[in-house]
Length: 130
Image (cartoon, rainbow, N blue to C red; front, side, top):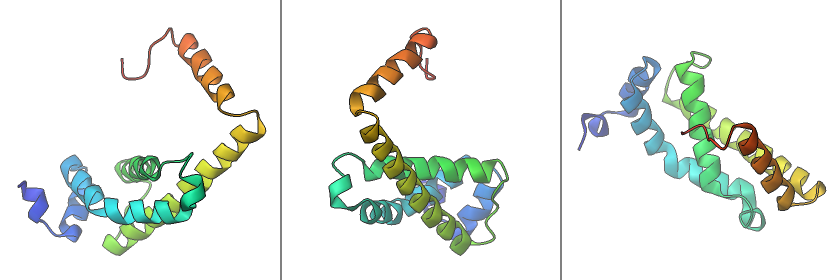
């Protein structure tokens, strides 16, 4: 068990705001179940065939991490942090649904795959991880 696992959420938040990456990771992990439930409910069963709630969770966590690390959002307490996660989850669900509907209007998944292939070609076959 790490020292972060025994800390209270408010202690983790203070550390996360002060650029402690491990504290931020622990705080986000503690929020995972609530964010996952929210994303699942917002997507609804019908859309989950095409959109993964876990993808929404990951996007939400990336957004939260970036906004806090950049100083664009400095939560005053855990309640403000939780509210921000809820709002970000809702926005990410809305954006994912809009993107899915745009893909449908433009001819389906094949176009996305083609666009991805063109992007990879323009990068010389490299991804951002290489």
